[in-house]
Length: 289
Image 1 (cartoon, one colour):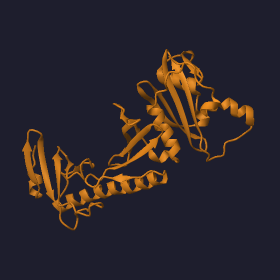
Image 2: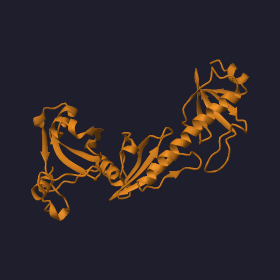
Image 3: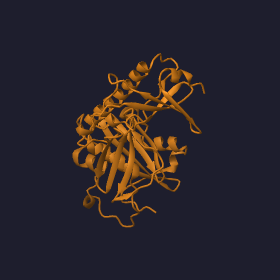
Image 4: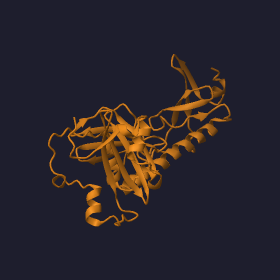
């Protein structure tokens, strides 16, 4: 790999079995400041690619977007690019922190890596929500009654879709909860569960749900002997966030408009590539094997 241009720019280049790395010394006038430690970044080390530089160190810049280097004319120009992507990351941290606060969650920023995270506790579950450098969220660690749950899938979600903490909590619990087997369940009323049929019976089919009221629902089913759960949470108006999960984790998760929703049976049949008659909806009183 030709790194002579990087050396001409004043970068220190080192080559090893893992490839070439280049270190840039930042001028004080362009060096970005860590807003937590209030220390300026004096050096940035990159992994050198054919056309781009990927930030590796210090930890505050690791994982930032890679930068083009063949068109850069000076070390100062490269330093400005570093500052630009660094400040974009800080913008995402501030924006997402405000959204977490609005949900009643407490954002935490690692002083070294500047990675944003928050904990959400719901019943027996504790979720660690972690943001990437572009502000996208994923589910990090999950504890159930203090015990870590192993999960190989990467569960990403758009935080701004959840306007209430309870809606986000319900979505996350539906991802990881496993309903226990029940041979003789207690009556619905004693467990605080309400069927939609009961609502229509007691309040009438003409009752309405105000545009911004909180609404969640859960439907359990079996498909060819396997158990699945469908959960939906109202975001606003007639827009919902839906989730289908089985014993092996999430199958589907998307926003949808109520008017375009095909129905649970048809949706599940399409997703799992089975005939609709293979989808058997079950109630909370139905014993599960």
